[in-house]
Image (cartoon, rainbow, N blue to C red; front, side, top):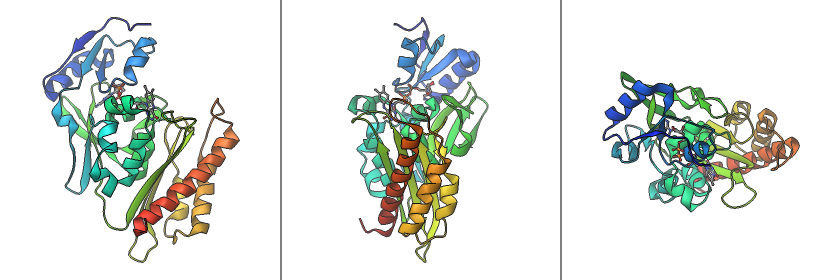
Length: 291
Ligand SMILES: Cc1cc2nc3c(=O)[nH]c(=O)nc-3n(C[C@H](O)[C@H](O)[C@H](O)COP(=O)(O)OP(=O)(O)OC[C@H]3O[C@@H](n4cnc5c(N)ncnc54)[C@H](O)[C@@H]3O)c2cc1C
């Protein structure tokens, strides 16, 4: 099928983009990489009367450390992160995830901002950002606000953003010593969406115990999920095998997968356990600098 007719806007500035959104509301859709929006339009699942193309707004391509954060512009492509030395050296959880999103074609076009706002529970960035406790910088014509990642996802394909709002960037705490993260993804074949994915990020306290931990789960609920009970289980522990095993069991218990062509509920829940243990183990090794 071909999409329904729509007007095409290519704003020259962020202010122009915001005023079109403000005027048209739900009738307008922002276009970033187009990797989710265009297929939805072709199947007539989305029928916006206007498209506002963000490509060309260089200010949305920021990818840098500043003011205690790593700022990831909404238009930063998956491939930019996969190819980034900064990500590989200081943000291994980002690098791990970027490398296993889709295929090179999708990675070259798809963006972090588009992926988060598409709010597919099988999307990888949602879990990564939950693990990092990311915040979204959101703008509309009459102001800015910061949206903590825990307040973004409402349900499948739905976020808490208003139609007049645009994400300009996502920020995560700047990397420090004693920190490490990892992403584990089970897929049927290379380039597939996750059957199950697990993102973990750990900060060790000076005495070597777990001072902070974030765990995000992919494709096992109506949205990407925070494994809050698993985080609590690990916090303050010495992150030994026993602590990791019980946190992984907690994560499996708090996941909520559905049976489909990728596997039964029971299988997916057990994969949450296995992948959580692996992601935590690798995070701890990276935090200790032993890998
Ligand atoms: C074959 C295929 C395989 C894929 N496999 C994976 C995978 O393994 N893992 C994975 O995570 N994803 C996967 N994806 C999805 C891919 O990552 C998309 O890039 C992503 O979901 C959407 O990003 P986009 O930049 O293309 O957004 P678009 O399609 O342009 O937009 C998506 C939505 O976000 C909104 N939007 C975009 N930018 C903004 C903004 N700055 N502010 C507010 N709203 C905005 C749009 O209006 C739209 O509603 C796959 C896609 C394809 C086609």
